Amino acid sequence: MPTRKKKELRSEGRSSSETFKKIKNLETEIAVVIGELEQTLWRVECLGRFASLVAADVSAEVLVRGAQEAACQLLQCESTSILLVDPKTGVLPDPFTLGAGARSSLQVPLRMGQSIFGIIQVLNKVPSISSGTRHRDSAHFDEKDSRLLEELSKSLSVGLQNARLKSRLQKSFHETVEVLTEAVTKKDRYTGGHTKRVAYYASLIAKYMDLTPEQSEMVRCAALLHDVGKIGIEDKILKKEGPLNDAEWLVMKTHPELGHEILSRMDGWRSAVDGAYCHHERWDGKGYPAGLKGEEIPLTARIVALADAYDAMVSNRPYRQGIAPEVAYEEIVRQKGTQFDPRVVDAFVSAYLHEKMGKGPSGRKAEPT
Image 1 (cartoon, helix red, strand yellow):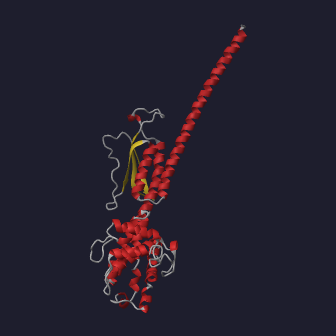
Image 2 (cartoon, rainbow, N blue to C red):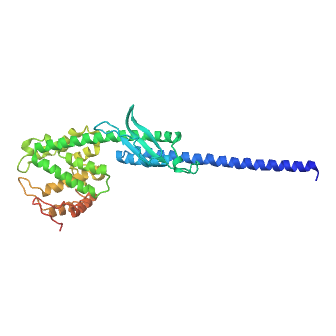
Image 3 (tube, rainbow, N blue to C red):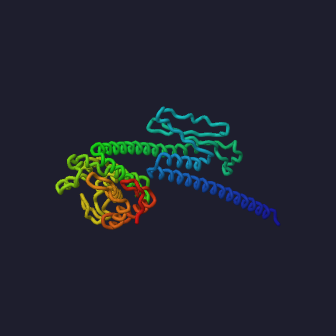
């Protein structure tokens, strides 16, 4: 074979080999880029899931647990601690006491404006084969980890601030409910006792319905507030020891509207306010004050209405003796679909059979016949 031809073949071979190497190198680079993109996407999704948790208006405890899980996933670490300023002392626990087992750590502050109210701390980076780190003692947090933890801390800070604000508002609301309940009790001892019993019965009924904890709490608060309007009823009518005449009854029937006037500014607790206002509405539309029917009546009111009626039947009044619990039970079941929401009646039946609802004025336990 001519020398020139051999040189050409050797040149083509080297060129093909170099091209093959370039292709392999390019494939490796593409794989690395794809891997980094997939990892970035996964991290964005992880941060997005935690942001959704913040938006879900959950408790501070749930947020903290969610942040700990997210931090461990994002930064591939062994543990996460979230340390908050003690509300009583204003002191932040020392995050730098790592212990003998700590190999690496990273801390980022939780901020409220310019103030630091906590720290999120991650410990012990897990070795990653893809990063070329195989030995656990050589794994350390880097700048990328710091940026990820900063993003997580921003979301957590917002969530914890919202949770604290909600907690303060709830505390203020419950204090208001307690004050109003006490005012009703001072106005009329029977009404105060009746209010607490209705709240107890309503809570038991709510237990057997598909309600969230927040909805169940609104039912309880609506029950505690349902007779607050009786503060505005004259004593000679409210405390009368005999049956009311027609004129007095018309005055008594204004108490839901009087209560609504007192509670109308509690906009953030509309479910409880509406439950108190509508507790004399009937499923068949023959109640008052608005003559609402069926699903038009707030669910809180439907539950309170049944609990209110049950306690009114089994309780003693100066002018009459309360009826036996089993008789009241049968009357409520008979009014299913007319006076009371069928679903609420079903929950009442379950509560009556499984809880302490079957006690009349004598305190004895009675089973339905």
